[in-house]
Amino acid sequence: MGQKMTWNEIKTSYPDQWVSLENAEFDVSGEVVAGIVIGNDPDLKNLTKKSKGDHGSSHRFEYTGEIKDFLGFAKWDIGHAHTD
Image (cartoon, rainbow, N blue to C red):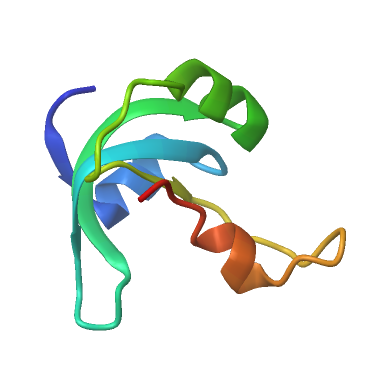
């Protein structure tokens, strides 16, 4: 951790996990294209607990796998969880 990676590198290195990104870069549609992984966990709740107080305005949570709709949340709501 600590080195800027492309989104494809992040997905390969942390399959089916939530990642906590710092200094994320985005394409014109707002999708992450690169960032520095500062944390990871298969469970978003665990990751946010670990990351509490560890982030600034450039911090973002993303999931590297395929998100399925559940508990009434739309894919957009969960796939774009972040703390701005």
